[in-house]
Image (cartoon, rainbow, N blue to C red; front, side, top):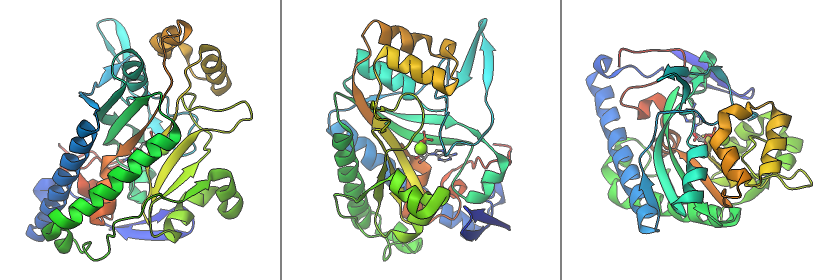
Length: 327
Ligand code: AMP
Ligand code: MG
């Protein structure tokens, strides 16, 4: 048993999820029901996005460019993975933000990807229950969309998903003790400005807010990576979706598309421009289009729905920071 502290103000007690072959029969049954919810969630989300005119692209694992994850107040990376193949250095996907910006500009005005994200989180993050070192995002992007458009779309999808599960996954939700407590949220969700939250709660605003809310809420204006849009006054046009008790499940933004601005932000943040050659080339040629989008952490979404204490419970092969199982 590991006792974990999430933020400074509340503690959580949970067992680090075991690998499949070590599960007792009752634990196997719990995992089985969680997997049932996972199947329903993936089925619903992919159906809704395809139905809304999104192209469904397959993910990549190795590329020259990936998400720098910097500067992001939430990031905590112990190691970055660079590998040499065919005489070139490539990185494992930390998120497909760069790929979707490029694909959305050049080919698909609306696209989504179920994308593997590899992030070697610091090992103490095993104790948050909210981090794994491999996870999946439903990453999507829409050309010419505003932040408000994306937030409305997400609200529709989240409310639809919970309503659908309450109807069609009754057996699983009852078994997991969530059928009574998981309520279909009401849209529109409340919107908070991060700067106000920081004034009220300090640095641990996310955990404090998550403890106080009973429905998902939006937090906007979060200073972070170069690709999120920032206006001349320094206000960021981005958003996180925060789930009750669970915390952040989605990050998204309107994107930067202008070459000079991207370069300035990369220089300000100490980002290696040579890792973003194609993105910069397209921006310089004026081929990068305006877009907005988001990425939903699938394990966190399912973890919240099923009431998992640790996200590893939602993974068939748990990838817990600091713990490397055989599979
Ligand atoms: P980010 O690009 O860091 O904003 O991540 C997008 C989404 O992926 C987050 O909102 C989470 O739902 C999820 N996520 C980020 N890091 C992790 C992690 N280490 N383990 C599981 N899910 C994560
Ligand atoms: Mg985030």
